[in-house]
Length: 258
Image (cartoon, rainbow, N blue to C red; front, side, top):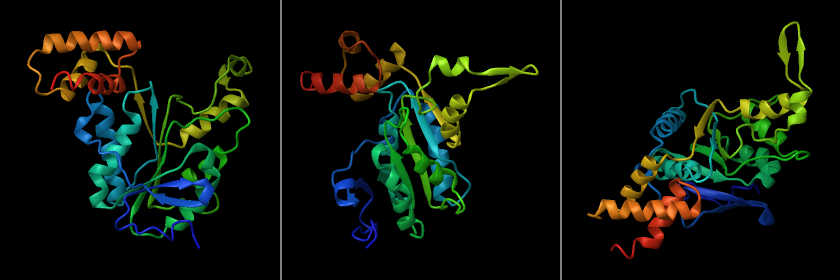
């Protein structure tokens, strides 16, 4: 029995790999986050939507890496893709970094299905000595067998190159004939991220963008000046301005403001 035999993809929009059962489990309570709820990241939204629409249409498309500051909407943007495009045949399978060794098996079981699958790897990064990225590499670019046309990998990470970068690695780089030749460790670090044809960067919010996110969550509040003062005070106490902070501010103060 394959890992996907128990799932009916006509009614299952998303699944997660569970190692203890060596198979996929349908996600029953999907995050309802909507595409238009994301503010301040219009460039990233447009690029990811265009790539996904090309993928769904059977046109050339890329694997995607969303990297950058924490809490800026990377993961929720991929969740919103499902709510936006599931009616067009998009399905998402979430695979934890520690389970990437099972990725070739998962892909084998879905490569001939009619749906279009995004393999979602959240908060992806690798430490020295970890080998799970090798299975990911084979799915991203194939080996003797080409990667399937109905599967793409969308990953989020706080690291641009997904792997740790050390000063000692840079010191091992050499100049030859006036050209810089990176050390082997740097080549290894960069080579994995290079397999993601679409790389989108996310940065900490400016105060104006943060307040735009707050305004979107409180559309009926009339006293914007007081709302903004409270939102800025809340962000200052957290030490960070981002979409996650705006959501946390909403959860704490929405009841007080009706």
